[in-house]
Amino acid sequence: MVAPDHPEVKNVINTFTQTAHSERCAYYGNVTVGRDVTVPELQQAYHAVVLSYGAEDNRVLGIPGENLPGVYSARAFVGWYNGLPENRDLKPDLSCETALILGHGNVALDIARILLSPLQLLRKTDITDSSLAALACSKVKRVWLVGRRGPLQVAFTIKVTFSCHNSQELREMINLPGARAVLDPADFAGLESAVKDAPRPRKRLTELMMKTALEKRVEMQAAAAGAAAAGAAAPREWGLKFQRSPQEVLPSADGRRARGVRMALTRLEGSGDSAKAIPTGDVEELECGLVLSSIGYRSLPLDPAVPFDSQRGVIPNSSGRVEGVPGLYCSGWVKRGPTGVIITTMNDSFDTAQSLLEDLQGGVLDVSPFREGFGLVESILRSRGVRPVSFSDWQKIDAAEVARGKAAGKPREKIVDPAEMLQIIGH
Image (cartoon, rainbow, N blue to C red; front, side):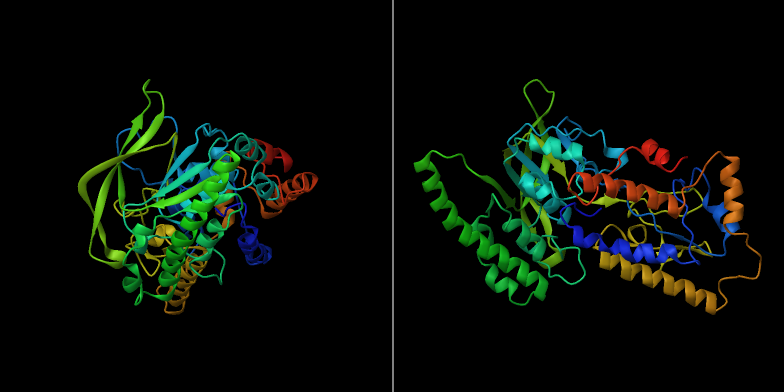
């Protein structure tokens, strides 16, 4: 999902729309593969089947207290403010001043930015009305992003557009109006020499953090002195904490919600991306009332007929060819794991398409038997009482969202109830 305040990234939808309009392409939505129709049934209908269903689950922390009220997965929280139907009833408690995000990736930055952005900026986006109302009442004014490793291992990457550099997502956060960055210069001591030979994107990212740590420290001291003199409230702030690994989410005195996280301090063994975080034996407690776990997404098995590596959360494959199942292919996160941005996944999909075309040209893919295509699938769905949604149906829902948004001065107002969507298209 793309953050609501990154509308330019959503332009990729134009490419999808072009493809969907091709007479060689047909779209059938509101169908759950594995339940409404099985993968073997799809294989009976088509010569080749490609699985590109992404990663719909999240990795768990596996620590005591992670199920306490006040603890949310990044996936659910992002789904909530983006209007994903399954997360529409999340109702996160934003009544505390300090939020803790576990993870140093783009999703963690997205969440921090949404929590701290001025409302007038968010009002112009396609964030849902209910999320905006909740954020308007939010008491959160401090957000910490915590990671197990150091500044040289953070996973912030490009701004999810196609031509930006690694540091832009972070730069956007540093320049967020009304919020100041709190970075400790001590965390970056001695990194000048270590970063010299790093790849250019990593070097730019680290240099930006180092520059911010030094500049913002001076600014903060001046601002704090000015605010104290004027009796003003401290502005919103966010910061990065390194070499800390969560051990336990601590409960409040009545045991009814989260009040903080106990962290193991770590030291790094090795260097670069392969560096490992080893606990030092020291611990610290960070007080917070909101904990968001942003430690990665996870794909789930789709159908018993499809091999699945539960350890790695992927379909075992070779260049997109599913192992041991001729005519079955995969692409995206379910193929290589939940890493990278839109352009990474696009290139990965081209790689799978290339494998399929090679198999077709090389005679590996047997296209001699007749396959009925969607005619067979449609009769299976009908027999099970499933009515698919067409692309023109989808466009009606899209038009309704855009019309509602226009009335509210937004790009769109997302419809979060599937029953309402089906009502719009007369299903």
